[in-house]
Amino acid sequence: MKVGTDGVLLGAWAAVHSNASKALDIGTGSGLIALQLAQRFEGLDLTAIDRDPDAALQAKANVNDSVFADRIKVIEADLLTWYEAHEACFDVVVTNPPFFDELPLDHHDSRHLARQSAYLPLESLVRAAAYVLRDGGSLSLIVPFDRAETLRQAADQLGFQLRRYCLVKGRKETQVRRVLFDWVKTEKPLIVHREELVLELDRNLYTEEYRALTAPFYLNF
Image (tube, rainbow, N blue to C red):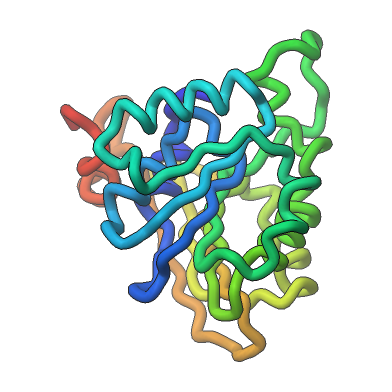
């Protein structure tokens, strides 16, 4: 998976508590989100996992070419068999999860396979996050709007409280495309903060809010 808007948004928006020291990026792809978090939070050590060998290899190359190589460990691993050996190890989990139901025509197309929710349903993803997070840890992710309710139900059942969310629109007059969520592993009810982000005023004319959020991660924006 190459750099995309969803990943950039999540890496720029995800919340990390000031006392957090260890983060997990699930399905790291190119390593984008892990690199963004390393840039944003100097005291954070990150583990980035991906089940696809080519993706893990690419992420390792990108991390090694960065100034954050000493703080990011890339692992080729299948979350569903990896996570049970890492109970309560992390303060933060971030993920840009797969969201397509249909299988690709070419089952060897790694980009499309990476986007298949059939492999990693939201319920399984949230269960794994709950297992590896310490109490008070956070789960940040981005999903299509039509998956938001499924995610809410899974998070409620697995011991998470919603802290903030952001409705993402392409333009002000269009429908919500994506939802960014920030959940906390706690039994204590939280005050929920609602946000809204519009990406464009017109084609290739970006809003100031979107620029302010993501400009630190682009060379020319």
